[in-house]
Length: 174
Image 1 (cartoon, rainbow, N blue to C red):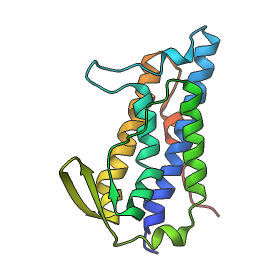
Image 2 (cartoon, helix red, strand yellow):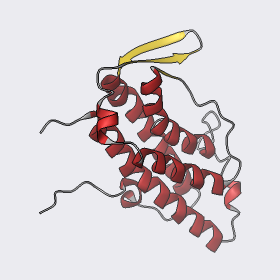
Image 3 (cartoon, helix red, strand yellow):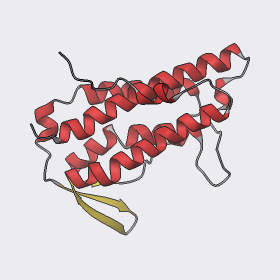
Image 4 (tube, rainbow, N blue to C red):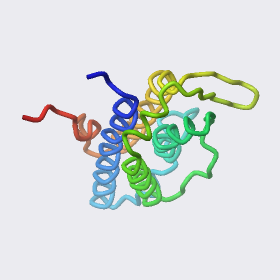
């Protein structure tokens, strides 16, 4: 059986979004247990020239459900909505993104194979097919931002490990 666009995109997004939801909750529990306001974390950066934690989580949503929506429209660009200022809003965004991805059917996503999609940033354009966009642009960005959000929580003391990042793996069943 060949791997289909749904498996490459939605399957991968859902696995890692499950990890993101889990490590956000573990981070929240850690901060509450240690008397830290979780909203203090929202603007945390690993480095002065990197975007904050809130942007990392927004980008996870944007490069997953937003990527599928971009393929449908034929155009994708950077996130444009204002960044949440509240940790609970970030958790709600991950939950809403997960629900949106689960609502997509396998046939609906696989029907997007071969479609043209253009990444646009101002006048700059990068043309892709749906498959090329997912594999060489969307997924690398998705994983980068998920890992950066994870790293920020680790940096702030949340007791996370690799299993927290991995999410539910798609293992062989009997």
